[in-house]
Length: 400
Image (cartoon, rainbow, N blue to C red):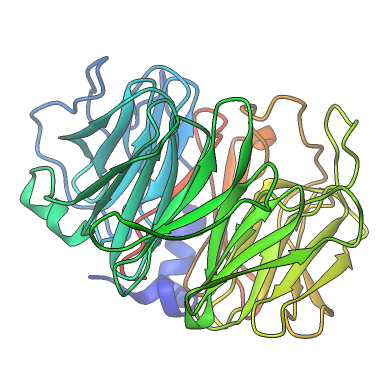
């Protein structure tokens, strides 16, 4: 597997080739892509394997790109609003579609027959060599080993069904315990913990509006609340309160290299769409919460972590704000895209940040562009122009 872009910038030759690559296409196809059927199945034409592929969604389909050059390898037609997340191995990406979760072989550029059907497919979580899917419309949780996807068949795995369907999330820990949210379609209240046999061993319902999850160093798991964050670590729940009566942490990003979680932070319950300028840093060891003012707003697709645990936030000022999670200091701002504003509809496109290794990939829908930036140096590695504006952005990420 080509690891060059994961750990360092491109060589001079590769960089020159990448920069000189300007993709032009008609009808969403390129000379390197093959026709795709309307159901998303690729044609019988053999595809050349893509190295460390990226997957970007657009209105009506998926783009699969080479992770080093950003060259568009294939376009797959897939109607509806689709979401993408790493499956957890070197080849696959999970696509959330209207009918459920579908598994895309991004390396070979084709949707597989592996599907987890169910209304409103939601969060995809990777942790401790397991991938967990939560289907909001049914409350079903599916856990599997992502390395088994290479067989082409649905992996044997664990299932659990929540007491009530809700917009939830679940994560399996290294010892087999499953942390899963509690709630109904009308109200979400907290989280519970199940043993390997799905027997409940702990719960906490002091987390109104529970949403999102992230894992920090030493397997401290956080789920967001409308008044703080709930931490599960070493067999116990701990609630960390927000400094405001309403201080919602709904999206989080964690790193095995840091005990500090990065979260968003909203404090206006009456806003149609609050465009926050503060982020939260939650120390899972000291059980403390710190707020950092960026001086610019951001969106739920703006949070990521760097290779050493750095907290990364893509601001509407167009810069990636690099924050020391231990001190809250903004160490640098990396220019990435032009100024932008978060749209009112959460399904509408906006610049999105996806980080893999030392490389930050940033989409710029207004210019139909995608950029690769070295997190360490802050230098732009390469950029590409795509046939259509993209929405979500992800890629293969092996390991946890």
